[in-house]
Length: 448
Image 1 (spheres, helix red, strand yellow):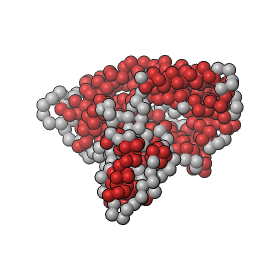
Image 2 (spheres, rainbow, N blue to C red):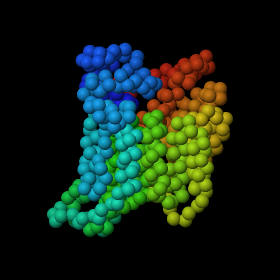
Image 3 (cartoon, one colour):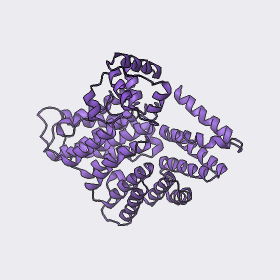
Image 4 (cartoon, rainbow, N blue to C red):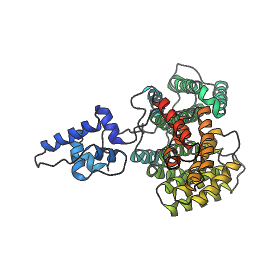
């Protein structure tokens, strides 16, 4: 797994090939160049605090950073810190003219070894993309120009059935078939670009492209390749929009939101989830979106908004409906509601409530959902550590790590590794030292 560059300032340095010490030197040179004679008291620890989000540079330091990176002052006025820094990634605009471009952009992102480690879109970019999706009316599909393969009903049905079979594979098998899924998406992209089809078939092609791109995005996300994941989801949203499928688009916004929460940027999740809620009606979809937003609010410490969304999610999930839920949330169940609400309680400091809810959810989760079980067991381990039940937490963490390594989900391995600091105060407990050494070994193999 690539180690993600988690802050725009670190990425701006990366683009210049600067170390933190190099940046300090650039800031001091910038201070000497300014006529008003600004003093530069910045050192390497200060840069580290900025990049870990522990402190925000003051106005004078931001002016020096702008000078060092050749950023116009107007950008500082237009964007808040740190979004004015160079290297911002903006999504491809929505609209039928950009659907193939967005798919090709995602394919390039998989090969872009230098940039794919960086967290893709800022909170502003995600909010703007969600607003475009909500406000723009998709244009009518134009019939493809003469020439190329004719996409008839029989071919279209085969493409859809093959895509559905690939998406339905058990989690453990998907790590070995991702190349087939990406090749299938490439075939669909070729047909969108050069094929011949009527408007109805065009919508089916765009919807299939959206579904496949979403699946590919999840695989890259599981591997910690956040840049590529974001590109695939941007393509998925563009194609869902052109296919005029609001439910599918809402699901892609939920994917973006989950990634933002996972990477510690819950503020970036709230606006896309709000837009998605306005435009989807199925109760299971609404329950999923509400639960995601509750997680974001909990991570931000907003207990009132979190409880409101949890209550609404529970009501929506229990509403019942005969027609099937959209495919992107068909997995949603009371098990997910219980465990994720438990994680909300953990974020809000309510450890006892968290343990009860997580335990209830795990007892309801079907065995077929191994990746989800691994994530949920890690939540359970964290709640057990905080309750002082270290030996049980150790057993649960080891089980979660075994599962994550078996199914090839690097982000789940990283989630278990993040428990390391919580175990360190308990090295006197039998087995903790060995487990910490195992976590270090996992990190060394990844970096090697």
